Image (spheres, rainbow, N blue to C red):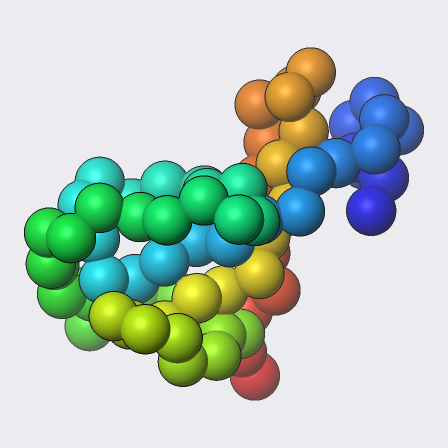
Length: 73
């Protein structure tokens, strides 16, 4: 995916809901083991179940420090 700000290629990774702090993680890397819960008024991201929680696919631009993820409808 191309960054909408600088047009450079973004890195694919994911945002995992089962750990603190909330962070983008590159594909192939694992999150920590600490748990947290989602806010009632948060925006639910399009996700799939994996070991230890749910992962939402997300893209990161190293140049702009921007993360992009799809939200569920």
